[in-house]
Length: 229
Image 1 (cartoon, rainbow, N blue to C red):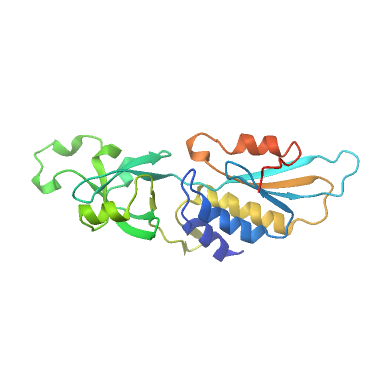
Image 2: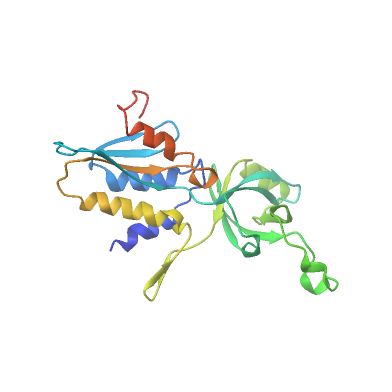
């Protein structure tokens, strides 16, 4: 098993609409496997032609590249970043989690913090309220002026997780759906002679409404549009 590939896929950063890092890995791994195109949404499609013959069909193998994450929506005067979520999070799991903030100049490390009093300063029952994303901010260790210079509204924020093995198991960030992207890549590499046309599709924006898959499925049922790259 190519554990290094799964590690690279898991650790790559790619929220809905910003899947570039993941797409670059898929493009590298499937280079030369067939005709490769990227559509206007960012779906990467590899067409591996079959030998044809009676009953030959088209088969699409799809896995989405994006992961749940955030974008920066506001930077306050203290340098704290407020977030907009892309995909569903369990807010109970976010406090004190490390994150990566993808800026135009590189990655900034940060920590997700609750904007509430420390527990030892709360009155009995004061911490019973369920937290929402509005209760969190990202501290990147910069002043307000520095943060506003380095971070832009819309910058991607993802969880800071390293891939590792634990006995017979593997753990890491974005295993939904990078495991399936891994399987799709390895399946296409292992594919021998076949009659059907096979389309391997790394789709986008699944976590915010399955947006990439329907256009990709339609494209695999017709001639490549000339505007694809």
